Picture 1 (cartoon, rainbow, N blue to C red):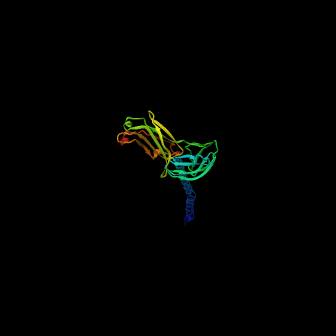
Picture 2 (picture 1 turned 90 degrees about the horizontal axis):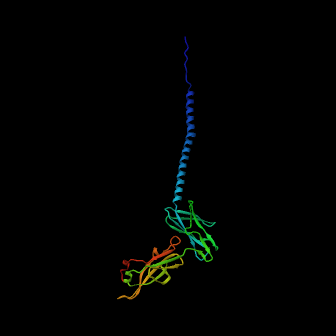
Picture 3 (picture 1 turned 90 degrees about the vertical axis):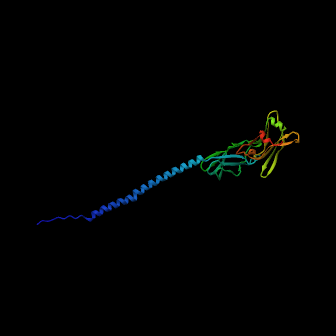
Length: 279
């Protein structure tokens, strides 16, 4: 008679293994994977931040504007006016202006390729003082006035001289044939809407042997009408009269200072083809 030995595996050992695996999977899902996802999200946020910084830097470098400063009234020390011209393809947000050490907060949008005239700034200038003006934007750019520092002396603000230079041509044979004399007249009006205010009544210019020119000073910028005439001597069938050779009210007769020229040049040098009509 013999005895046989039989072995049985305890079901608890298999259960422990399974539980261990489940615990490891739980640790993996509750700690490792969230940490991996967080690290991945941090990388995404970092890249987004880099793109945002690059975009902001690009916008700052591409932002372009011009600032023009001029007295609101040339005879008054009380205030100055600031014109801002947006010369780029995106809006510009103005946040402050500096007048020497004085800061004026702003909250003004300037649309692409457009101009904004800011409300006059109270300065109360003193004789002998310079006023350096600049404007800053939300993107961090600072633009100085293209007109440079303004200076106030005992006679008022020192600004650009305005005027019109009329250049009379030297005499040519065809002008003699047309009976042109050496007497020219210039008349100037300031255009104000639909009205024209006479600035210079007919002013005579006598042509010298060669070409001549005359500078006619003006008090202020703006749109002008310039009329230039020549005296035509009497000849067969035609009485003596003033003949118009220049009469314009367009961009050539606009003093657009401070964001443009303060002077107008009128070169009355025209070809014969423009004077084929009877004088």
